[in-house]
Length: 419
Length: 75
Image (cartoon, rainbow over all chains, first blue to last red; front, side, top):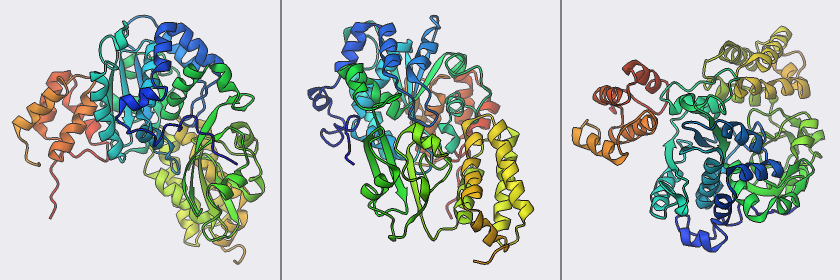
């Protein structure tokens, strides 16, 4: 297995604030092309590329832009979601710090395509260095006429605001992020209407993840045909995988979609488990993705294969747990985190997560019963089915999959069988 | 910097080119960084500048972990 560096190819090759270095290495070619093509053609190209969102939900990018672009009158907004709060996920930071001009170029093209004059980048509040870098980048970009009125001498104008997140996981959810920018409590909303119809301040808004937007200049500069040479049918291109947990080395690696299996990835890039014991379970798509047991590690690194194996590729944040961990402990840790992050907007998540946390605590203390486990399962299922946003719909998935894959851990904890 | 100083505050307003609904959240972050909390005087002032009610602004501020609405005693 080898890395295929397309999105990360310039990372470390130029000083992050050095626009000349970026230009010398193929930078701004895509933006100039886009300005010559016109917004409709840009959207057509992105549609044809088959690019799908990299923030977790995997929504197709081209159609999303087309929806926002269809509104012709008045203000529209583009938001780059750099909140990256998902557990085990730290890939966007690599792009934000290592090749910020490419991300900015993607933001400019997106804003141009949908007709937005105000763009935002909402950066995780813990990424102090990244926020400071982007604030300086905006100053440099204004000087170079890449932000402000008449970008590169065209009629297109846009400004970018760098916003620092304020320490809430839920602001990674698109409506919670929008609420935050409206100076409201960060909370999800019922959909529809989608942000592309009624988003920020009630205006059409596109929210894209950093990695998604970094694909845009690559697609436009090299062409859709070149983009389709990488990846598999229906999932073109490359993807940034984070790896963490019980591995010898954690890090971020860019891989061609489908280039290997989960087991190979853990062995070759994570250098195996931390203690050398076999892998017990893996969350392939961040902290809210369902567990895969060792038997499923032969699945290829594509969204489709991981879905078929019973989980989801989500943010491609691979979290590895080795043998020796109890599923009860892992689930308890996850529920403690998500329990303090529910926004409270809808009852199933707000109440469900608290009840689930109470039950797992009871089980952990050795006071649980079989009925408790059944209740944990029922609440989890209800939460997945009726929650408003992606968080409530997905945080119970690891719990439900743990109950299914590792029932013996729970039985030992409630004293039904001895360890 | 901890005590609220009108001059520091006015400089922050100038730096962002005036406070509007569209940049208020970002601006409040700058205020938080400068004073380590968002003073009441600021909430009143930005409420007038943006047309948002003080209640809405406090509602937002008190819901985020990294915003403080009063100066915390550090022992």
